[in-house]
Amino acid sequence: MAVSDHVDFNGFMEGVKRRNPYQPEFVQAVQEVAEDIYSFLDTNEEYHSQQILRRIAEPDRVVSFRVCWEDDNGNVRVQRGWRVQNNNAIGPYKGGLRFHPSVTESVLKFLAFEQTFKNALTGLPMGGGKGGSNFNPKGKSVREIQRFCQSFMTELYRHIGADVDVPAGDIGVGGREIGFMFGQYKRITGQFTGVLTGKGLEYGGSLIRPEATGYGAVYFLMNMLATKGQDLVGKTAVISGSGNVATHAAEKIVQLGGKVLTLSDSGGFIHDPDGISQEKIDWVKTHKTHRRGRIEDYCAEFKSATFTAGKTPWGVPCDVALPCATQNELLGDDAKELVKNGCKAVSEGANMPTDLAGVHVFRDAKLLYAPGKAANAGGVAVSGLEMSQNSERRSWKEEELQQMLKDIMAGIHKSCETYGRQGDGYIDYVKGANIGGFKKVADAMLAFGVV
Image 1 (cartoon, helix red, strand yellow):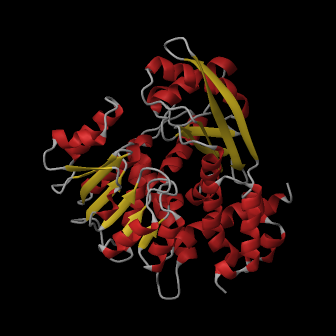
Image 2: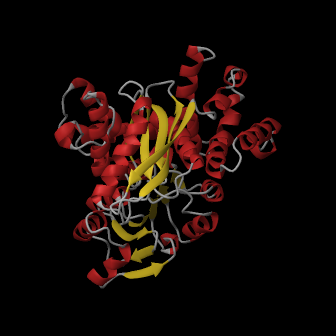
Image 3: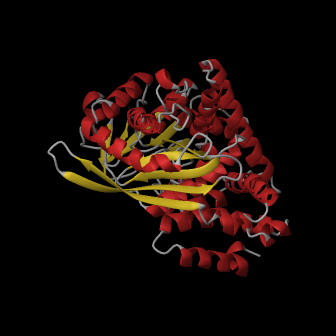
């Protein structure tokens, strides 16, 4: 029976929609997982009778608070802040903080839900959480960002801890913001603990943390291609985004012999048919991070490129695609265009960048398609390793961490392969990731009883 015709599945989703009105992103994330999990539940009645999926789809708690701060002109500003603690069955809540005007409770609930399965797939003892604010760092002075971060942490500190909930960075929250927040946490509590990850190397941070998400997405892509006896040498790649994840994904593809054609931001995308070399990637990193510039400025610096305003890059023919910007940036028609143009593999560097229609297109076409909960788990994996280093009061060498990251991504791929291989040999990575992550969390929840 098709899952869409399954009366229990339909009833479950109706309940999710009823309990979470006006939260489309969260409902979408739950449905994407439930479509695979419901058939798996038939093989284990205890998961069903103990309402495991229903319990995971209800966050342990959603903390919301007001954040007041003062801008450089002396005006009092008011933002909203949240921390969604979704599930801690296998370890402390773990997940990033996002500062962006698009942040809502629905967005953070979807991210925390996805994070629960992503963290389980890493094999590390981490539960799922996410937080943030509708504060927009763009256009703000360093002093304004510092005052906001300090005010945000003044509210958040009572809900987090090294053995309770360990936030990290995300969109709008980099090393600078983590430093401001960690300083305020230390100031309030008088404690120096591993309560945040993504810290500077000087005060407990880990090597390769900035690179980990982008590199990990490419390592997962390599694992997928290897099942077909292929690698990245000579392959063309279309990438969306131009932030930390996108630029490091581009960097790793270039290192492995591929050719990157595009990068993007909210204004549009650049297409460089000559390829975006390491020198050009370094320029983008500096321009976006330090100058806070737009990606379209790339075309003034590198004359081989063109800029297309208000569009995503999915119409550019390529061998592989990596959506690394934000949720729902790759729609059903975009997925059809990629398939039509001969794209062989898609590895998601962002969280839920492909909408449900696009996911179905990729799965129906039997593309090598890695969902974000599997492909972009490298970032949280190294965050987990940073937690371990903080607990041990030590730092591992870069070579050790690079190998650990490769091993973790290979382990995630193996789990997806185990639960996602179909009768015709096709590996459904979405199904594999959903079931692999769910089973680990579910088994821990069964062990604890109804709590």
